[in-house]
Image 1 (cartoon, rainbow, N blue to C red):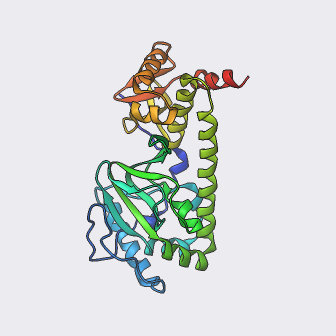
Image 2: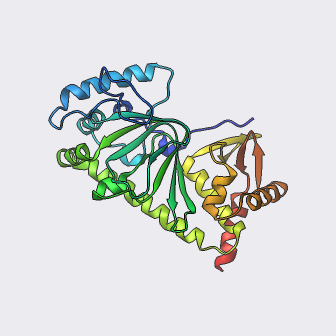
Image 3: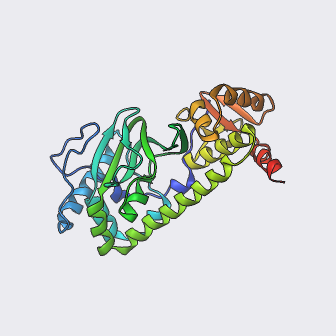
Length: 292
């Protein structure tokens, strides 16, 4: 059996961002249940957010108990202000959160579930950019520059997000510049991953692209699985072979054959619908062989 372990990058708690919607609101799938608090209302809403955080932490659900490293050191006042601006949205499996080229009206934080980010090509095909775990943010680029989304976000399974409107974000950035700095760092990290994705897609063979896609997804999801007495990077059932094909630009049948070959070589193990990476060096070497 595999035991999933949280990625250390996501292990620092930020309790304030686990806020619920404003008191009296009810989460409704696919749309906002309450309006964001007015720009000048911070103290009362922040206190309500803290109460919601405590109540949520004591409940059975999963929420934003952790958040991406860029938001770890905002300071208490900025954390409270950010928490007070949150509204809650829920999405059913396969729901579209936003489409590519939609106006960027909200910055999102994943409280529970996973979100797939894809880029639609001119021919209608899609490239998988990444799958984001709880704690990550998305939609930040369009919000940061006040434009449109450059990708498409889709719910994998049931997803709960906390969202900050673009108007609230601008207000928060003015009052707490460290929040704007944190989002800028997320944008920089996301840009770096897209540069790496472009480089990966330039590899000539499917095997090299698939190896890089598998390593990329394992790093982004940050999960590990125990095999024997050791922990290895893994990609759980949230990632399908179709997803791997969309990221590596290969047919699912060819992806399946490559994975089976790597399993025979003991580079990976297939357990409980998860792919466990047993020999990272062998997978990395596939891309290196093309570069030299």
